Image 1 (cartoon, rainbow, N blue to C red):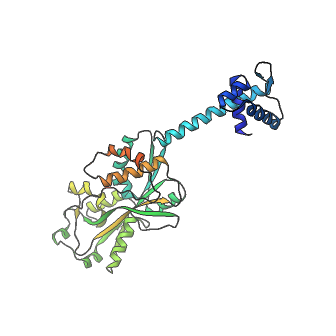
Image 2 (cartoon, helix red, strand yellow):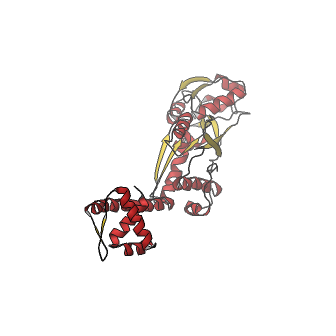
Image 3 (tube, one colour):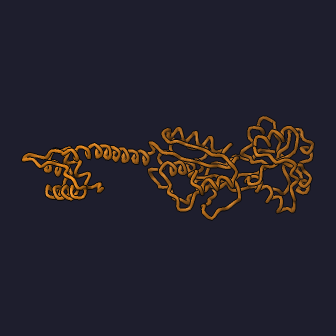
Length: 329
């Protein structure tokens, strides 16, 4: 069914005549008459009885008018919904993040963004780096954030900040009296690590391998919190993101052990599917992240609400966020 024909039929039916319908549509009466005739011929039925003054709907016309009313109500709703989407009055941002970013960095960012745009639905999936990449490729999330080193051809990677891994121990650990540790001493340490596929584990193993050290992994745990608690109980040592240990360091539950000549810095990545469309809500979120980085510590995040009106997001742009300060040993 030709929707242009249906719109002409609808206008004539509501106006009660061809002339009045043409006026409503801002086209000529002859054009309306021709289009109506073509429509009736296509449908194989008469929609209007032509009267000396105006027209009257046939039974077929009355039936079709009911459907036309519903169709054009939906059309109006669709236009309104699209307007709301672009005005950030509705929409959804599905985010995936590896465990460190999803557990310790993004929750505060999401809370700030939600205060700016309460109508936008936010969701956060937390998993290891490999899983987040798979979710993005499968279309389950709009944007991913990982600290891992893995790569996938279908994804665009950009660095949005950096992080540092620190060696942690229980506060009363004997090694705390022998600081800084030598790199060679790491070979004998009983280490707790995350599961294979974890970005934190991949970075730590790569950094140790660069110094010819094979880590002595005595326990594998799939939770950052579980690792921190086990280390605090004196059951081993772990390399942990500085983002994840701030609370425990301030509370005296963990101790950082400096290692001479060893710095484990890692980039934090933003991931987008190549060629994907960036919706207005997702674009607004990426701009908000960039705003927080550019104005870290000296600006009101509410001002970020104006960013989407000034600069459209580019699919490969790299918004950044503030990086926490390294704790003192």
